[in-house]
Amino acid sequence: MIIDPWSSQKYEYEKLFETFGIERFDENIWKNLPNPPFFFRRNIVFGHRDFQRVSHAIGKNAPWAILTGLMPSGKMHLGHKIVIDQVIYYQSIGADITIAVADIESYATRGYSLKEAKKIAIEEYILNYIALGLKPCRIYFQSKNEMVKDLGYLLAKKANMSQVNAIYGFTGSTNMAHVFAPFIQTGDILHVQMEEYGGTRPTLVPVGADQDPHIRFCRDMADAHRLYSIIPKEGKVGVFIKNDEQVSELLDAAEAVVQKMGKVLERKDDYKALYIQVDDLFELDQKLARIEREYDGYGFVAPSSTYHRFISGLDGNKMSSSRPQHALFLTDPPEDVKKKLWAAKTGGAQSAEEQKKNGGKPEQCMIYELFTYGLMEDDNGLKEIYRQCREGELLCGHCKKRAYQLLEEFLNTLKEKREQAKDELKEYVE
Ligand code: TRP
Ligand code: SF4
Picture 1: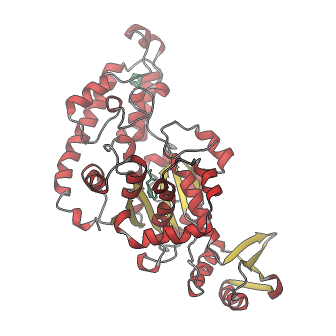
Picture 2: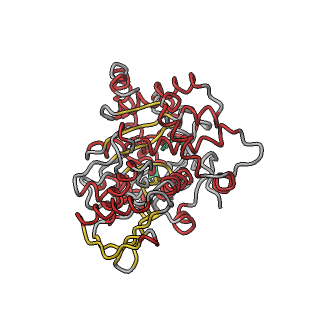
Picture 3: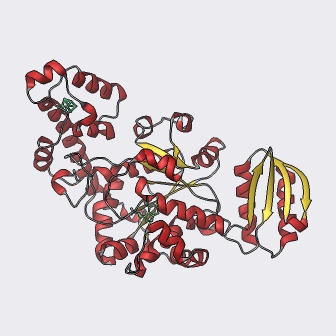
């Protein structure tokens, strides 16, 4: 199974754990974070790679970064909101936020010009991000960032055609700008660890599950360019020099680091190895990565990621701007919202009598899904809707009305805030 980040298929999330080694984002992972938000509590963020590196930094009050990207294409709908909800939460707990506008990717894979992409990014996405509560942070365009593009090119040295074809399923007729898009994305993710942008530190990339191929690829690239490899084994840790240059200098430097945080057990220059004992592998990894910069390495620690589920369209299929009648856009006027909600697929019975008798099926209901995705942030409120629906106390007409009222209020406020946001753009966009 290839997960194709450019297709619009729905994913069978369970398979991601077994097939691709994504780990479950369960309560144990998030319970120590401050005020766990609804998207954690409801398992909307359901998977991760290496999130522990980030929670370790949070626990130690050490710096860490968020880097995520937006693809300027179509209009912003409720499904796009979940990523910015996360960014806003992470900003509130101290993350340093950067957002990439993937205008090059949009040009290469969707056929937008850079000018069109810019207009869409600002009007549809960034204004909504600010209106939703994003505080000043760095938002840049791929096409305008030299470092991102340079890194994309330079890191590409350690990837080959077969490898990218295996990951992305490119064929002989894929345009080369498209082939290069994942490298630019790697540049996006890793450039925040360059000295100019905050230096080596844990970097979390919150994305939809479709983006996992890019994440795996980027993690591989980061590792491929490391000068040290760190391999824990039976309570000890082996630190190895991967190349043949400057081996004894690199071993010296590693030894100096280890002496401050643990014990050097043995050094074997002919194996290019240092065997050590340290408790904190994240710190070791980060300290060694920093040293690599002095030896012409890049010194990136592998980025961490989380994956969220996509909200369904109102007909039960994918929510997408290409099917506007089943998507809720953040700029929809109330009449449209009303029409779309009234036509939505619910878990209601054929008749009111039957529903009162047997109850509804919230699990299959798109209105209930809206509540789950943040329209009803309060867990008790949500549980109550669930119970009332199941027990036949609540009928769909009434329930839709309630959803409509909440949405109308939310969208009206958002509209006002979007107006104010126009004056604030310069505090965000590079
Ligand atoms: N490829 C992403 C998408 O299709 C957009 C993107 C570009 C991105 N660069 C990124 C996402 C860096 C996360 C991190 O939506
Ligand atoms: Fe969905 Fe509400 Fe109807 Fe239950 S009562 S099926 S939650 S619309």
